[in-house]
Length: 78
Image 1 (cartoon, rainbow, N blue to C red):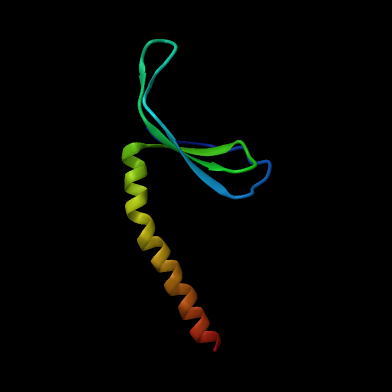
Image 2 (spheres, rainbow, N blue to C red):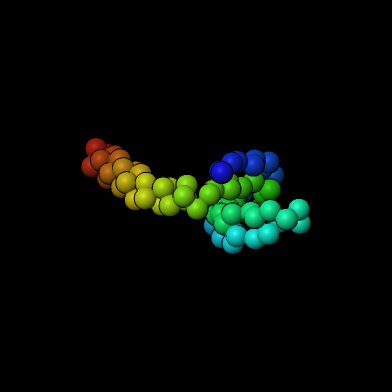
């Protein structure tokens, strides 16, 4: 399961943190996950491992799209 938790009090970067599988205090297994944390805030995106893999696959294309837009803008401005 993936979910957002957002309460921003400031923003100074981003970090990804791996959360290994663990046993909860109530005796059930909490699956491994990745938290994407907005630094200097209490905001994070909690991703299942499957969703983190899907995001990792999509990011190169998203960043290439951005790079192309920046390059086109620079050519247009020149």
